[in-house]
Each structure stands twice: as structure tokens, then as C-alpha cells.
Length: 126
Image (cartoon, rainbow, N blue to C red; front, side, top):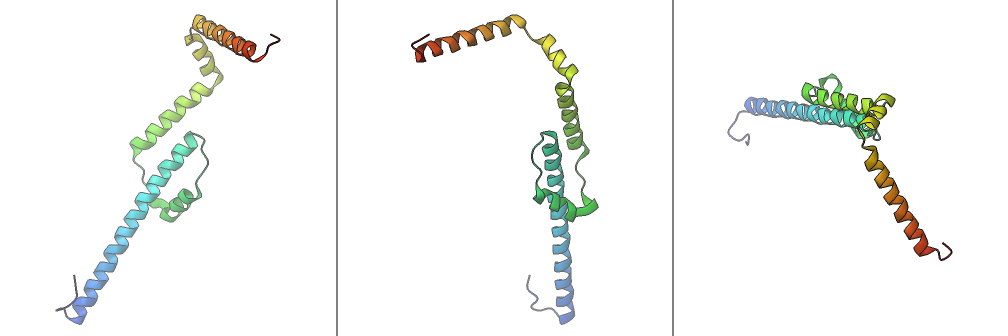
């Protein structure tokens, strides 16, 4: 909107209001970006990926305004707990109990037969 037809005081007030609204929008945008950066950081921690300095800077700029939805944080935490349980020794032992040993033996023997046949093809001594 142009300031034509407004008095000087009205134009200044309008400009002040426009600047305040822009600052508010920019602040909200920064908070949203920081929330996404926080979620990415949680996922990086969960999957043991390298940290992003850009995300760390965004979170630092936003300060205490970051508010990631609780549901998303719960999902990340639950998945992390499951991963930890699977990675533990007890989790590995439980996985062994669930495996079909006959199937594993068949797969291992098929792999050995395949490796032996390939070796015989490549090596005339065998």
C-alpha cells in the first residue's frame, strides 16, 4: 500500500507498523526453522549421523523459543529406545532365539557351494 494521500504522521505510523509486522514474521520463521533443526538433530543423534553446524547455529539463534511438538519427540525417543534394546546383548540373544536355524544352515551351505563353484571356474588347479 502506498503512503500517498496520508499525512506525514499517518505514513510514519504505517511504516512503523509494517516494520513491526515484518520483524514478527521473521521471528516466527526463525523459530519454525529452529524447530525443524532441533528435530533433525534428534534424528541425527538417533541414527548416529554427523552433526550439522548450520542446525546448531539456528537453534542457538532461536534460544528458548524452540517448541518441537511432543508427539514427534516421543516418536524419536521410542524409536531410540527400541534401537538400544536391539543393540544390547540381550536383544541379540532374543533375536537368535527367533531365527530359524535350519534356514540359516541352508543359506550358509548354499553360499559355500556357490563360492566353491566360482573358485573352481576361476582356478584350473581346483
